[in-house]
Image (spheres, helix red, strand yellow):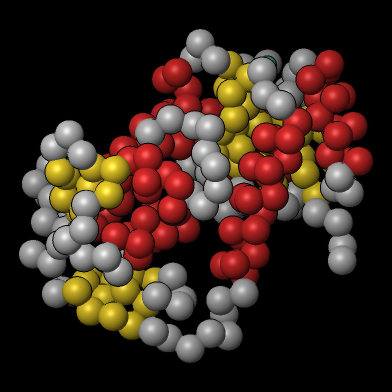
Length: 232
Ligand code: CA
C-alpha cells in the first residue's frame, strides 16, 4: 500500500522533529513547514492525506491556515493546541478542523488520532459505488449508505462528523445520549478531548438542519443529560 502523506505545520523545530521521526517510523511520508504561509502553500501543492496544524505560527496563524485550506480542500486537519488555550479547540472546530490534540501530547495518542482521521476519509472515498439506503424521518431523508441528508428535497451540506452524529441519533430515535456516550460512539475511539466537541458539532448540525437553530425540532437537548433525535 502506498504510504500516507502527512504535512506538519509547526514552527517549533524540536516538536516538528520528534513528531516527524515518530511518523516516519510508523511508515508515513512526512513533509514539514515552519510558518503559516509556507504551510498553506505546501498543503495546496502536495495534497497531503492529513495535516497537523499548530495554532501559534508566524505569518499566518493556524486558524487562518485552517480557514484557507477549507475553502478548497476537505483534507483532514488535526490542530495542535496549547493546554491553556481552551478556546482554541472550539474555534478550530468551528473553522473546519476535524480534530485537535493538546500539547504536550504522547506519540501513541497522536498516532491513534492520525490513523482514526485518515480511516474516516477512506470510508467516505469508498462510498461512491454503494447503493442508496434512504430512510425518511418526517421531512428529512437520510441516505445511510452514501452519507447524504436532504430536508424537503434539499441537500444539507454536512461534514462527515455532522452526518455521523445525525445518523447515529436518528437511527435511535427518542433515545437520550450523554455527551460522553456520543464522543465514544460517534467519534469512534477513546477520545481524550472534552465534551464541548459534541456541543460544537450539535450547534453546527442544527444551523444546517433546523429552520431555527435556537428552536430545534430534530436534535433536542435533554437538560442536564444530553441530546436526542425526534421527528417533529
Ligand atoms: Ca507554535
